[in-house]
Length: 397
Image 1: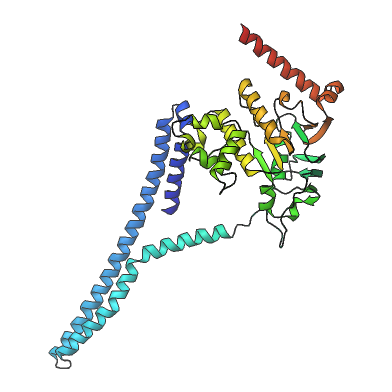
Image 2: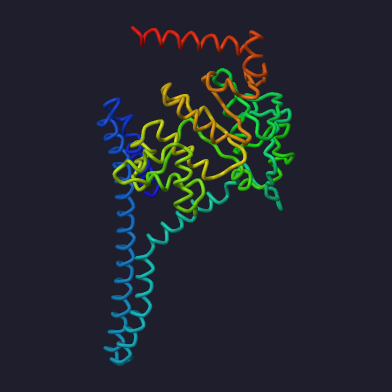
């Protein structure tokens, strides 16, 4: 019954969170039937549970009543035979009541005990799951002095049968901006996940200021790095809460200052509820550009020394992209920055560009050097420029 109840609740939450997708495909009836099927399964389990509980209580009551009638009959015969007095009869009855009352109570709470044991079993199974990434005993906190990042001959694969990165080796000097580009599936986002230590490298090492990230605490590592993702996820709370999430406990002045640096403060104070405006599930009440600015403000408030921009503008229109790029340039000044880019036009000012293909760095250099080399990067640049020209021509028509 517990399992069916959890399954039904999961389907309900899933359908509500993805209501836009449900409406896009006009699948309201399908979702209703899916939820109804889950509720029917819960209903069958619940009826079975209630039936067995009723049978248990009925059997228990029958046994108690039969025993009580039998012993009272024997006591009555004892009185009739002058072997017992009426007082003995009352005493026997009192003893039986004292015995059966707690037994009857234990039978009534059987279901609660059984359900608690089931929950305890699930909790024990959950606690037995070992985290894939754990801090070493006595691991120190990461000390960020300058913010230099180094990948040293890193190999990695989510599955040993399918390697993702191979011999990835590069350095990001303090305050430098390094861009990662390449075809989809080349391993760009995996590098960001490894830097955050969501996974450990298969071989090689990742270092920050000479410290192997596997030897320091995860909390200190993640506090030192700020990320602006491609798909910004906001909590269903106020704009103020979502910005302040970068550093809980920050003062209102600090939150508003961060919003100002992200060029979203004026927009927020123009809203009817200002900073107390609810953003909706996953921030659906804000546009893509507004959500990205909230994410930038959140990172500014966090104040990390190392920044990661994971295709932070790839889903935006050209005008919004330029505005966001200006905000990102302000944020990344004097900070070590790693940019994962899809649009090459956004990383032409990078100190160094690394071209990843099939998990390997096939080219490296600045924008001008890579164009002169006429390799993978130059071909990608030419394709994107042609696509941009075609779009401009269509817009002109």
